[in-house]
Figure 1 (cartoon, rainbow, N blue to C red):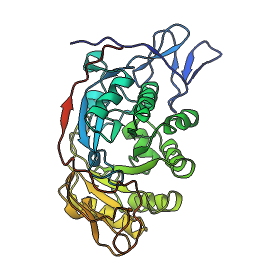
Figure 2 (cartoon, rainbow, N blue to C red):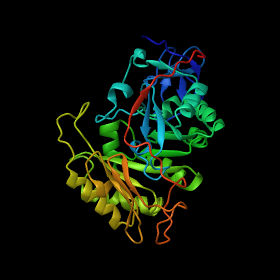
Figure 3 (cartoon, rainbow, N blue to C red):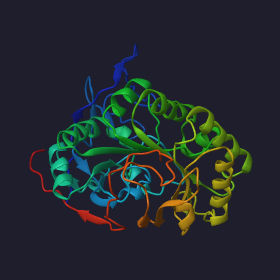
Figure 4 (cartoon, rainbow, N blue to C red):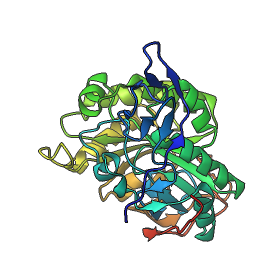
Length: 362
């Protein structure tokens, strides 16, 4: 089935003196003549306006464990309805969802659903939250915000899985509708960002500082460690020290393993020892909740009390095998654990359930 593009009016743009339309959503500041698309591919100039060509279109829907986002301190064990669209405003050579994020064909978008239908599906499947993921929700902000509104009307939480690469004005609007986020901090040098992603580091740091100091959004950080590119001791010391000083010790940090993909197939996968080394460096900087991912590492995937060091949420990959957190979100020793917790753990487990949403409202 081929799904036609949906040309929905876009926000965050202005006319330049030379007659081009400039997109103001992200720091790429794409300047467009008639018919041109931005670097993300999904925002296009049509006449004297900009449109989002993927509104209501999805690459698919799937129910996942919240831990897969990864979010370890946001209603552990709960289920989350995940979806994405096509395109991306970064050009990561190591993208591990490249078939979606780098798609230039609208027939990649096999499902269609209105915001109301997505919220209804999440409620019907007893999902605690909905995730905008697979590609970056920044580029389909108008759709994501409408879905968020529909979800909140039903008491469903919303989660952005994002690179955090956006301008200040849309950032305010976007995170006003998000309950949680996982932000990719892809490295801690601008050289890496420029060469490996086609972007810059500073706007991502500004997003993280905004989340910490200007919002109530629960957020966690993920860094994919790529051998020889962003895994040196010096860079890890600098990054984790910055996090501690600017964001505080309670933001969970996930170090995940790279596997060869897309344009970096000539590199080796990240050794587990690299993740363990990174975790120890972060802990030495005072970060209290540091995790490893994409490897088998029960200790590195589990939540420990930062005071008495007892394991409170023991995980086997994305499955919780022991849960000792008190119903008030505290350890038995009285130490409060940062995060958002229900009175008891969720029991969704490690399942992954693809679903279809039949919706004729678009």
